Image (cartoon, rainbow, N blue to C red; front, side):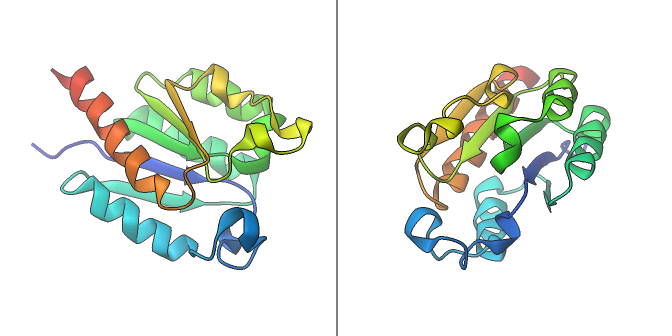
Length: 148
């Protein structure tokens, strides 16, 4: 039996990792983040996506509802304003880890309240790009707990 995949979804501007505000986000590229995530997942299948379009992220969440074991999402700027993203995540029956590269609570006030957090099982923030691997391992642990 093949394990259901985990979905790793990345929101707007994360395709610019490595170039965008390196003092906040570091110099690690999204391709390097993907490699870290796949390594951390081991044998668990991974569907890794990034989009600057809200509707595309919603479509991938719908796909995860039907086919996925867990979702790791870095919704980026959509964290703070996207009701459609929140509504889609609320339909997902498995664990959801919300991840932010920066410590959003040390930034401007507009970044302090994530709508996505209300649907997330867990939230990790401020660990930098390498924190994705920890988030993947945590998500897989939650998925395993739910499978037993």
